[in-house]
Length: 141
Image 1 (cartoon, rainbow, N blue to C red):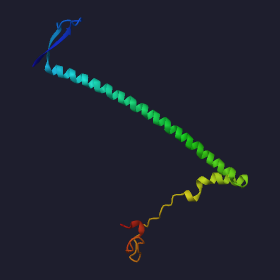
Image 2 (image 1 turned 30 degrees about the horizontal axis):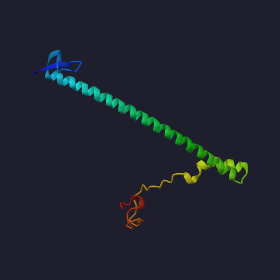
Image 3 (image 1 turned 90 degrees about the horizontal axis):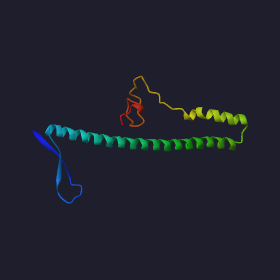
Image 4 (image 1 turned 180 degrees about the horizontal axis):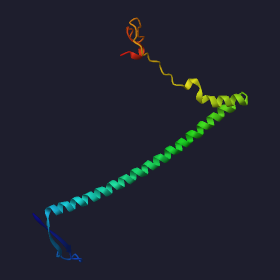
């Protein structure tokens, strides 16, 4: 099916309603729909591009804020260690030992419970549910 496309302009003075015929062209309706679809896609693509740019700006701003917070946190953490060392009334060697062994103290180790690989006797009783035949780490409760 063919559709007629007309383009008119009005009289520049505006005193009359005369329209000047500029272009007359016969096009298929499918071509018109495709042309409109392409224009809509271009418009949508431009909108998405703008939205992407806004998200990138927001992400960079948030990253900068987090970087500042991290730097502040690191500086306060370092200053805390220094303050703790200066307040200690110990010899220099003891302070250095304390500083370097604090990261490796046994209190910070991960305590992994030992799991039994052998079958449990029926005399063993679970401390959680008080039923025989399994231990706490195997309890279904």
